[in-house]
Image (cartoon, helix red, strand yellow):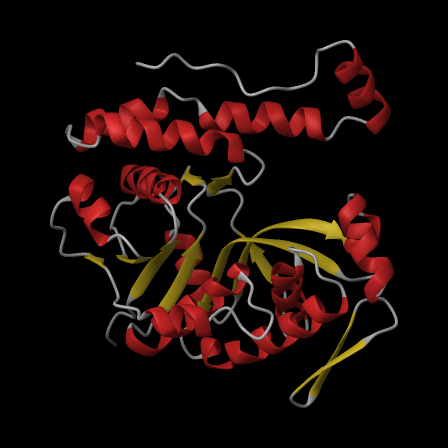
Length: 297
């Protein structure tokens, strides 16, 4: 029986900072992958990647028109929906086991077991953020505004209730066959955005859609997703500008020197403190801040 192709998918569109994030994530993947999968990089700057990666047979840059990029934003015109369009495109032109990963990620272990889970028909997302009704302030607001509403998609009706789980969509895995139904996720997300216009509606749409079908496998043990550390992007972009011409090993070492994983964990510890304690630390000037990094490494 022939081996099913596996594709690791990145979306790096719109800024040098996202390009730098994606390259760092991809290099971290190469450090842990025993048998690297095909890599699909959906980007508006193929040259930026080739500058660092050179010519690699396993890296593909699918061509996407400006009109297609816009169409993928859905009726709600949200950049968050681009990943759904990218997954659908990959399913059509590069069928097999698909694993989409956000650019702000660092691989810690070979995700081959995740591809195997996908091949068995399971869905993958980054990590469960728990029940929407018991989550952070934004999650609780979303639950309050959406409960009691019905969201019809095809023959299915989706509801938000006390049991609704929210998964982080920094990683999304599925087979190309399952991805044929992705227009349902766009439809659901558009309805959610129209009801309460908050950025997490894309991941809530995936959570509802996946959760209605079967259990979701978490990718968190394999990959760090530093979604909370947007302040690191200028640092990554600076390393790209200053060191992209070096060898891949030297370039990767410069990225490691930024200590992104440790900064992510420190900021998350601060973020998870009780609100009164964060307020107190802010008043005495001890709130968490991005450390200053010298202009040269």
